[in-house]
Image (tube, rainbow, N blue to C red; front, top):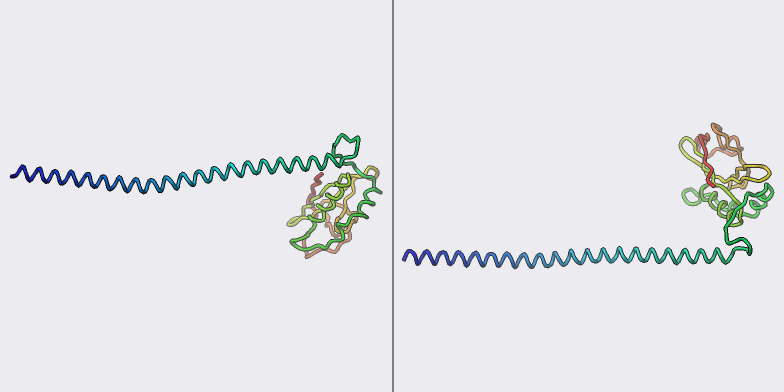
Length: 199
């Protein structure tokens, strides 16, 4: 009787262990299936996105490059070997260019159209005419200012205030507004500490 009860107890324990293991296995499979599917899906999606992005970027760059090259190639004068060249102007050519250029007709708007915008526009407009023009960044103690410069063939380096198309002087340790006869703006210390000419 004792052995029979013991055998029955062992059988019940074995059945419970089998059922418990089966339940744990099923739960692991179900959870793992969803987690594995989600991880695989996310990984595949990320990989596909990265591949598509890289391919699109590469294709877009090539299309843009080819179109830009063709546009530049087709507009070059005959005999120039399709090389984009710029030259330093004479002083009079610089004056004539500035007289026709319309960048100075725009208004200065704080945080919207500032000295940097004026300088960039004059620089770009000059270069489309084949005239070499530099952007000049002037550094003050706590601020800065942008102008342009032309290295004229007959009068040397000339600095221009692009907001007014006026010649200006840059002298280290001097107030930009004072040496050029401008009214100092908003009590900013515009003592020129240094400047950088970017061709």
